[in-house]
Structure formats: structure tokens, C-alpha cells
Length: 329
Image 1 (cartoon, helix red, strand yellow):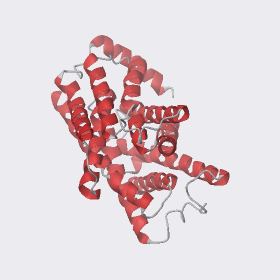
Image 2 (image 1 turned 60 degrees about the vertical axis):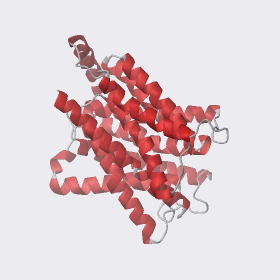
Image 3 (image 1 turned 135 degrees about the vertical axis):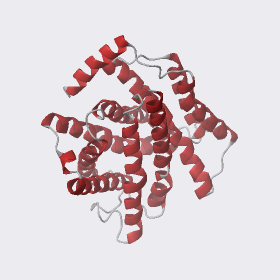
């Protein structure tokens, strides 16, 4: 049991570090090549889906065969927790600013914790609650939410930010159960496929209504540009850190409860900031350094205080009921 738990922690930490490496590339595409955020989200998901479909069709065609019930569940979670999630993330940045949007997205471990309790009967332990509070406060410091120039919150922005966290929590909760019986590669292929389809529909809708940041461009291919550089960066972001991060995190859920993995993966935030310091020359203020320390402390707190203690027999019975309910999705 300890070996499996350790494996889960290692996979989650590596996933967080890999995910963090997407930030400089996305920032470069947005600021240098002016690629619309929604186009970046679509092409990342579409490239992953296409690559996985081709790879599985050639190497493991059996992994593409799923039952109608499985396909329905994968389509639903892909549409909401990949497609709608990425669209809400873009909208949250527009409404709240990038810094506050980061804090709002990291409410997802709270929704995972509550969802795991409601759906699977997983008990909420005090070290986990403490870790969540410390990590959220650390994130707020890290993105300089204490600065009035950064703090820009509206009711609509708050609702969109919380909805972003809820959508991402849905992926964690669904994957925590489906990964026990479904290959992570099967799950990734179909969720990314349906997520990309939703993003494509949202692109058409936003350009038709004139609410996109694409300027005069309505063609999602032309939105990326005609030169090779942005396409190569997109391909790298998709097939490298995005695919790698999702794959490792989904695998980690085989060994670690989603409520714990969600806290550990918050390491992505400080790693992203440290990469920006190293690669982009950004400077840290002392409250941001304190925030990094708090997040690091929060990610190890559940482990140190045994928040991931073995599940008792009553817990297992409740979780069995939760699995049955989730299977009806």
C-alpha cells in the first residue's frame, strides 16, 4: 500500500512540474504571435486527440473499443471538464485577470474533496482541510492578490472562476473511478476529442457573435498564423507538457485518492512562477516567496499527518455505492 501511495505522489509531482512548463509557451503564443486563447485551447486538445487516435489505432486498437455507456461518460466529461473548462478558463482570465483566475482555478481541490465525500463516501479529514486552506492562501500570495492593482473581482468573474474549478474537479472525480477499469490512454483520447469538438463549436459561436479575441480572423487555422513557429510551439505544448501532464496525473489516480492528488498537483503554480523567473526574467516579491513556501508545505501536509490513511470497511461500502451511482452517468 505504501509503495502504491508513493508511486501516486511521484506521478502527481512530475505531472505538476510538466504542466507548469506550458505557461511560458502559452504566454509566448499570446504575446508574440497574438494567437487567440480559444484557438490555443482547441489546437492543444485536437492535436492530442489526433495523435492518440493514430497511435492507438496502430499500436493498441483494442483500447479504442469502448461500450456505449463508457463512451457516453467519456463524451460528457470531455465536453464539460476539457472543452467547457478550457473555455471558462479563457473567460475567467478576461473577467478576473490572469492572477485572480489562477487562484479561482485552484479552488478545484475543494470541489474534489466535497465531491468525493458526496459521491464516494470518502471522509474529509482535518489535515486535508488545513492543507487546502494553506495552499489557497499561498496561491493568493503567489499571484499578488494582495496588490490592489491585481485584485479585480466581480460577481460574474467570481461565478465563472468557481465554475472553472468545478469543471476541472469533474475530470478528477470521473477519472478517479474510470481509471480503475479503463486505460488512461483510452480516457485521454476520447475526452480530448470531445473537448476539442466543444471548443470548435464555441469558436464558431464566439466569432459569429464577435466576442472573440481573434480580431478580424474567423478561421481557426488562420488564427494560429501562416508561419511554422507557432504551429511547432503548439505541437510541442500539446504532445509534450499537456499530454504528459494529463497522462501522468490520470495514472496517479490509480494509486492516490483524487482529493490528495488535487492538493499535490497545486505545485504547478509555484513551479510556473519559478520558470517565469528563470526564463522570462520576472522578479519575486517577498510575499510571493512566502506563498511558494506555503504551497510546498500544503502539498506534503496530508502525507505527514496521515490524511491518506487506509480506508476502513464502512468507507469501502460507501465508496461501492458511489461507484455504482457514477456508473449510471
